[in-house]
Length: 481
Image (cartoon, rainbow, N blue to C red; front, side, top):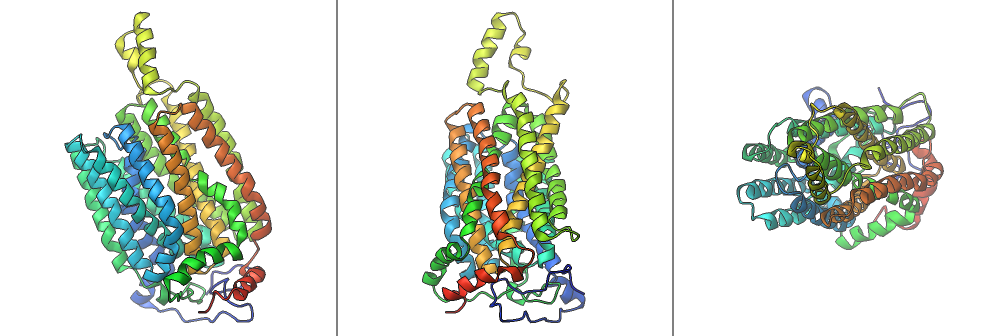
């Protein structure tokens, strides 16, 4: 039984020459069939990211890593995303040479080092440089992990399953941040717990299946990647742009995809709430991610609609969410200021007879008006999950070839990280909250508008409609060596 929908034929790769029919293979049965099931493998992949990036997200969501001062955390994030941006342009090629399992192992251990640096600085407050250095190393490791993850997540499903697979992965991955946010107070025990979990994540890729042995649920094999030289691998970056230049129209959307975290986590959650309320907000944020990813995945995979209709539907949902959520957030942003400004305002309030508690307090979950602030966090979380899922789905709609998808996801993480590095640095030098908020709103809106022509011109109803792009690849002689 296949998972194809009417009008879509099963294909092993959109990069196969159009003259060839996809060969159908018999899938294994029993325990072996369960292990080599694409759903099993994407669940395992989700748990790798649950244990590593999930723990990182739990710390980031607390604002300043929980107890590390916000400036040190912001500088570490800037360094992290700078190295991630640079190396992600090349890790698609590294993934194709080393294989996804080894690439995942190399990518996971950096998260353990980064969490260990937070533990170190919590014990020795003067060890801030260790956090920054660990951030730089994590940037390299994360570029490897996310490139391998994106390649596998988009290569294993059939055309009709891509939104579903992305939703499953995103839900499991964000459970890591939910568990981390449930830890309660942030102390040495919390960091040690995060460290142990991340070390388990380092070992998990060893037990995942070899992608070359994977057969999709429709009987087609995942395309085998054979690239004999590093020179050929780096050339594939150029080839990916040459054969699919419309990927450039997704770059602004990629750039915005981690940019909004800075305002959400440090300039909203970190600045407006006390530590116990920030922990609750963090739990609510990452829990809502699960709902958002599953919901948009359902829309993008609805079998009653053609793929182009699903693509435009996903785009329209994001467009409405961007303006609704940011319009709502603007109302609160008008009253949010940097701590240095709050100190000056507190002095003024004290001089006018206010109590010290009233003049300097941050919002607690028991305060009047907190519920509305919490609902904004929920909707920001839904927007984030829908944004990331749709970006991956659009890349998956362009190709089924894991080699090409590795390059695409490398572009995605590189450009995404460049945006994050810039805004974390802006936060570290105390750029006004309103400036960061306004740029966040503008970039998300612009990213969607610029991506719309790509959705219109490039997303087809099935892989068969992409034969012109395959012929371009053949003419450049990139499918054989």
